[in-house]
Length: 97
Image (cartoon, rainbow, N blue to C red; front, side, top):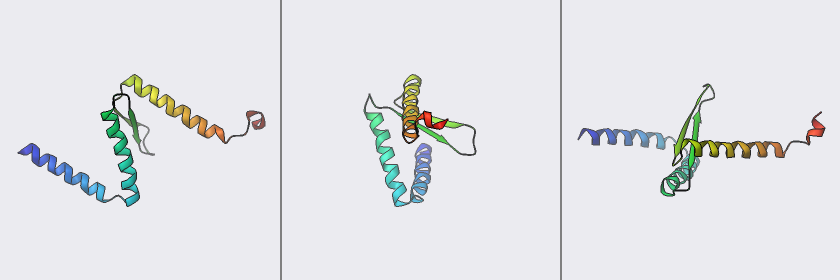
């Protein structure tokens, strides 16, 4: 019985947080949660969630269906994608000197 009460309390606390979200935030969270669920259901799909505060020197890394090595590969791909995105709008390096 105690386990059920604890789970009910956790579920209610979760719902209180969900109720605080705007409609747009809820839609955004739905997309994120669906993607995370897909990672649990598909053997070749992985997720890495990085959570941090601007004021903290560290971030938490949460993974779904991903080993440490697979997580490193995913983060490397993300790093490359962001680098390309930011470099795309930069002038040629010859113009920077």
